[in-house]
Each structure stands twice: as C-alpha cells, then as structure tokens.
Length: 223
Image 1 (cartoon, rainbow, N blue to C red):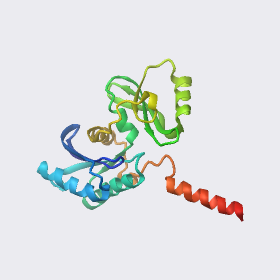
Image 2 (cartoon, one colour):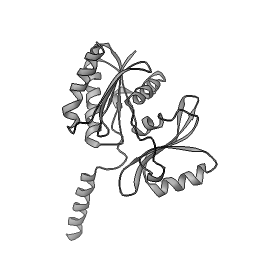
Image 3 (spheres, one colour):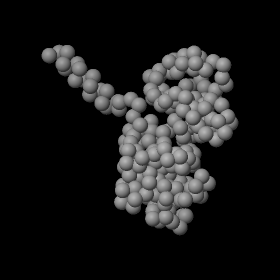
Image 4 (cartoon, rainbow, N blue to C red):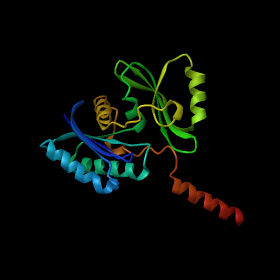
C-alpha cells in the first residue's frame, strides 16, 4: 500500500511516500514561504519522483497538531480534499505521537512541544514491543505541572523525553514525516480511524482569539 504523508504543523513543509511502513522518498522544505504556497508543488514533485499519481495512493496521513494553527488547517484540508474526491481513506496523527516515535526502546516517553510562557503541549506514552500506548492524553499544561505529574505518578519509572517543551530535558525535537506515516499505517491497520472526522488537534485557543476575548472582556467590564 502506497501512503502519502503531509506535515504542515511546523515551519517545515514535509511530504513523504511510504510503501506500508517503509520510506520510499520524502521532501522537507523550509524556504520562508507559507505552506499554502509550497505544499501542492511538493506533493506534485514527490509523486513525480516516485513515478506515481494520487490514484496510486492507498492511504493519506496528516499531522493534526498541536502546532501552527494555519499550517495544520492547510494540511488537513488538503488530505480531506484528496480523500473526498478520490475516495482514499485518511488518518490524522498528533505531533506529540509523531515525536514519541523517535524513541525505539521500550519504556515511558514524555512528548512535549513548547507553547510559550512556560507552557507546553504534553502527552505521555509507553512503548511496548512496537506499540505506543497512551498513558496521558495530549493536553496543554504548565511545564511545572507536567514535571509534578511525572514525579507524582511515574517517579519509579525511567522516562525518555522528546520535543522542546521542557527546556532542561529537551532532546530529539525532529518531527519526522516518515514516523508520521508509520504511525498512520499502524492506526489504519488497527481500524482506529474515521476519515470523515480527521480534525485539527487544538489544545489551546489561538493567540488572536485570546487577545480578542481579552479585549471583549475589557470592554464589557467598562460597560
């Protein structure tokens, strides 16, 4: 099964094609342009490099975040457009899970992504013989809260840290589009997906919305 993977959740615009869980080729681009300008040309280029067309694709996978609000919407809307028009199943995978796949040894994996002001997106996984089980669902927390939770519930466990959310423990922050595809294939094989409800994983409100709500609350207070 040919798999097309799209990751627009960060400053990189990444696409890859896999044969099941084996990478065929990938392209990653960081040229300062918006993903709306670069994504479709990248998809065209990688299909051409692999001598494929969209009709050869058996599964579409997108990173659903957390990450860039605009970027995530672009990636998801693209795979859903392909899915709807060509009847190709699609799967969404969180960026936190993609990060967890950087670790290959059994044990606990703490995935974090910086979301500013000493806050992070966080999830905890346990890798058992190739299966990444969710112990703590993706959420937004203060870094101190994450550390307290880990100390309280998992102090007797060895934990691998991935991502840039906890600065003193930050390691291996690479969002691999290949790992995105592998996670997507596993989810698809396990029938743990519904293509019609692949939606952005927003764990906190966009900054623009927070500013608008603060302004509205301020005006309401004045009135």
